[in-house]
Length: 332
Image (cartoon, rainbow, N blue to C red; front, side):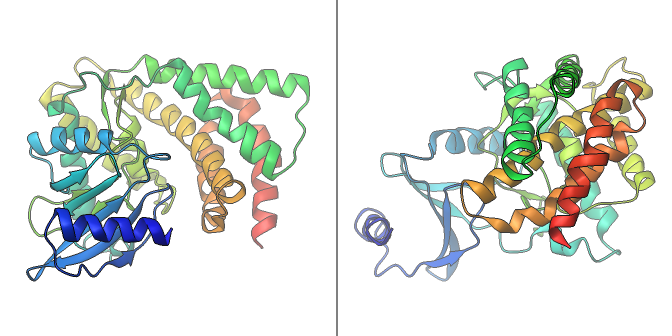
């Protein structure tokens, strides 16, 4: 890793012209990428290190340009070395949404800004040549729940009927996603990837995995966030605000409110199955234990929402009676 850091510093000094670059490491994310802050002529910038054998920075560059072209606030790419996996970016600051959401006076304003940006993203950003959030990808994601959380982490053995019931639920959830209008999907649009900035709020990060997929995916990522939970009625009010705006701009034409909320609810279950599996994988595969504490919150969304859908009763029973209690017991 030190050799890679030396290569990065060499690129900054000899190719970009920064004399004796001083890199300050900032928080790692849940991938193999690393980020550093560097001051150039008194102005803070971000350096991204994406090892090319593990991460491809081409999608980051592509999506950043699409979002910026549509008037959204994302880091601007100042210089890049695709072969080495290095990017020099503008700095959106260090005020993440998540800690600021403890201040009740600005919560509605912050979510209002995020919803407005999401509408702009879905209405304006091109989906051309993006990967599709198709049946295969949706099921691959839900299999993370089975393989990493149920099997690997909790060591639960599902009976053959339970496995069949789970697969039926997965099929219902993927059909729900595929029946929706298909738009630009950020895929990780939540409080740890949104920055509070003085102009054109929010600043948007971690968009490189964008796809073309279900219109409710990013909304449910934002409002049923794996890192912070809100009362059901408050979530519904924010979602209804989105629905009104989406109808006004025409991306939810002729969609009844009841249909929209069913899409939203079931999309959330798909996402939370995936997320809980990813959190377990981050622990077992990557040695990152910090995400384990977020699993019960994530599973609780599945329990709360699936209780309202009889066709998901087998999933509700599995998570509420077996998976969630075991995860909660592990933390306490």
